[in-house]
Structure formats: structure tokens, C-alpha cells
Length: 149
Image 1 (spheres, rainbow, N blue to C red):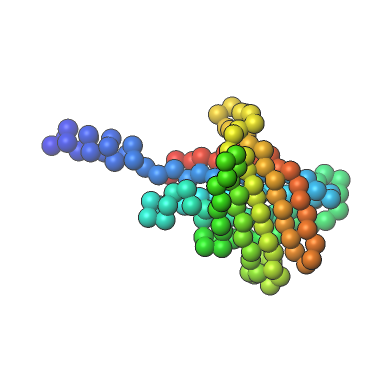
Image 2 (cartoon, rainbow, N blue to C red; image 1 turned 45 degrees about the vertical axis):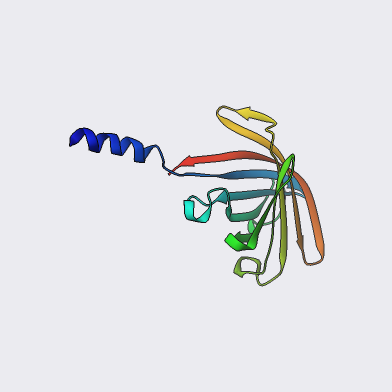
């Protein structure tokens, strides 16, 4: 009986889900922009489907300004498009984090890694944010996020 439980625990343990996504960073106009994209971890939701996409900005060293959440999108608010060389995540929100303003976000991440730091894959990317009739576009560097549950 102990052997059966031991084997069962190994089999079930090896099928555990992984949380994955990207953590990206880039600079534009004196602000340091960060993007966090996390995929669902539950199989019934699809583990490669985006669950959370958050864009925030902090002033870069020596600049004025305050840290803030630019946009926070969840689940069905995020669309994913697979292209040959990249994946594009897009969405529009007007939630509490944006003071009711409509904010459009587009994050494109290259499928091929551009480098590696330790065990972490690095990918090139691009971020486009549109709010209040203004648009910013910037290159971002994205680290592959992978965490076992």
C-alpha cells in the first residue's frame, strides 16, 4: 500500500502546473515602464491563455514623477495573437486603476530568445500604450517568468 501511495504521489506531483509569462521593462520620456503578463495556471482555463496584464510606470533615476499603474487587464480583456516570429497581447480597459479613462495596451514579444541570464530566457519586445489621445511606443526587454506551483 505504501508503494502504491508513493508511486501515485510521484505521478501526481510530476503533473503540477507551472505559472508562466513575461516581466518586461523599458524607458520612455523619463519614465521606467514595466509590464507583467501572467498566463493561467489552471488547465480548465488553458495554461497558455493570458490571465493578467499589468503596465506600470516609475520615474527613472533622477527624473520627476510618481509611480502609477497605467493599465490592468484580466482574462477576457486580453487578446492573444500568435504570429510566426512573435506573440501579441492586446486589450482595452477603463477600470478603477485608470480613473475610468480608456487605455489601450499592446505588448509584442519575440518568440525567439535574444539571450539568457542564468536560467532565465530574455526576449525582445515592444510596448504600445494609447490613453487620452496620446500614444507611446517603446522597446522592452522581457524575462521569461516560470514558477512551479
